[in-house]
Image (cartoon, rainbow, N blue to C red; front, top):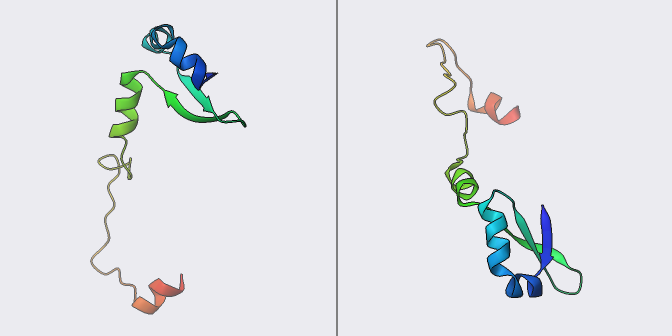
Length: 79
């Protein structure tokens, strides 16, 4: 990932967006420490990240408990 300071983003936004359009990610650094504070990503990558949900195995794994399976509250809390 290429990282550029915010001043360069302001002056070269069109060129940077063309890079992003071709699939590259652009980091934006800010402040005297030049810390990366944001990343511009292609829209397809953003949508993929946005759609990711906790429990990514949902629909892929089936968990079943037998009818005779029991656990007391005490057993549950002490594990």
